[in-house]
Length: 428
Image (tube, rainbow, N blue to C red; front, side, top):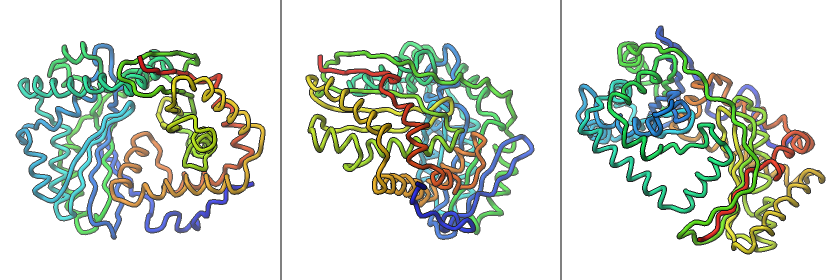
């Protein structure tokens, strides 16, 4: 049975959205432009292959620390000046560091977009990294790490990732290790920035009301910091992820309720077909009250306070992460019920209503993510950064190629509880 998701005609794959306009500067930097005439704002989104997975020995936490330091000024911008000027123009800015990449974005009224573009690129590509600001921001990062270490839920999750991912970079905390953070220097950070923030390792994505400022934006790109950026030798890619199965237990002070955490490996981001299938599978199992695990464990058996199964799409290998909150005395019963639900999913065909529901949830979730300029710029920028220049409608097309039978035979076996890294976290 084919997915019942109502796809739009091929000529108009997503209402109001064409495919991005792609360009490459002479130095190898890639540009994606996505005009959205009805959008009230412009999103300027800069992406770089400089996440924590690319840190070398001794660089723990530098990717995230650099994200902080970027906002401490450049050669022509004093600390805090960037935020003040962006906000004075009616805009907002933010940044995020992940395992694979880092990105910095600004949401700004169209008329101010050219100036915001100049400010963002100078800030990110030519950071000042002054020693005094470095020392002060180190304390901010250390406090952020301390807050994470003080949250037993965060400690349990990080322990699961370390146990399941082993020595792979995905098993290390993005915030870094305390001793490494204490020994970082501005010179080491500058070296990290030069090694990874190269023209051929970054993407600039522009989305929103671009038409009225297109010429000005193009001129700023051609004559700005991005065009001056030198290319870099491509860093060696991190190794492929291999989740290590096993059963573990940890007792944590201040943990209010026990947790069952399970981690499974799934196909990497480059396999879009498998990623869409994995999204369907995790939706069938634990998205909403009618999903199998929620209906069984929370609504019927009333064994858990909550149960979530999230898909994390990653470049070296994706993973599914389950968290069930329950009484410590019910951990084994919950684990047995999860295994039984997995067996039933593999043995009995999905009903038409269940399949239709999952397809609509996944498809509409993707569509909803493209309703804002920021969502479009983020999707287009991340795809282009990792060489995925497919049309925006491709995920919906791949979704339509899945069937219950194919899901059962190719993906359900990957969520075998025997293949999971399992951690029981209990109050100490």
